[in-house]
Length: 143
Image 1 (cartoon, helix red, strand yellow):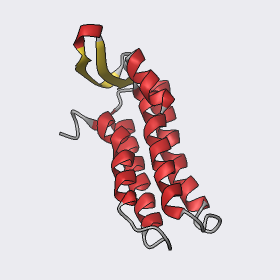
Image 2 (cartoon, helix red, strand yellow):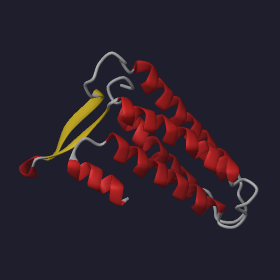
Image 3 (cartoon, helix red, strand yellow):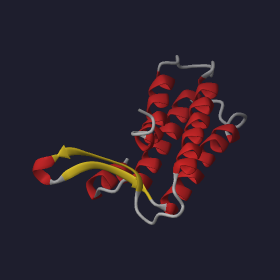
Image 4 (cartoon, helix red, strand yellow):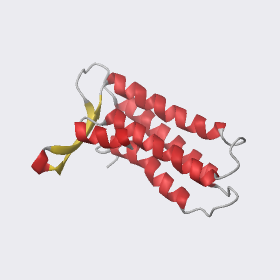
């Protein structure tokens, strides 16, 4: 399953992590930072796996997925990467854990909400980078 849906897992893993972070109680940050960091590091691992599976000799879109979303309007859930997009995906996946680590000491109030926002931002950014359908790109861009 991971081979066929690697980009989807890469995009939606931070969203699942954000939903898990919301299950933590408000108040003192009891483990929410660690969970957010673990999710972002796992996402970085998926990005590096995508990099390893990428064929540098090909100029076509790779790791592509396509599913009819709203077929009456020609809207599809369509994702894929080329060389430039994949480099940006790996960079975005690298920056997320660094951003989370950078806030460990400075963010002391509303930590749970901050971690949720970082993970949601990572989902939106990765989705915009891998979207190959204009409507899907617009949804992720506006997120």
